[in-house]
Image (cartoon, rainbow, N blue to C red; front, side, top):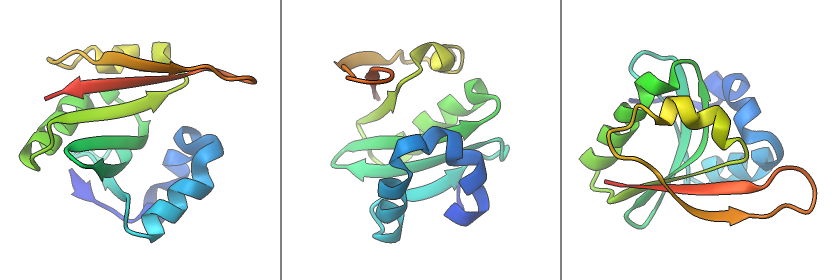
Length: 125
């Protein structure tokens, strides 16, 4: 994975940021989150560390199934013990995540008053 400017991939990431775009942009400006692109340049991700857990804040692109193992290797090489991601569309991500050798565990469902529930997953490395 290669670090990349947010501006160069903001359009690609827009669908994944939805209502959280303002907060995500602030985290990037404050240096709390960074923007990366996979080696094949097909998937962009905004990530932030939380202790020994690497949080994927927003991910978008094509061929997610080819990118997920690169995400795991990236996290392991940097000493993280787990990866966490949140989604409102778990079925949409199922195909891409199925390529992981380590299966994600559903750790929480946050019920929404309006719209879709949020599903939180963790991958222990």
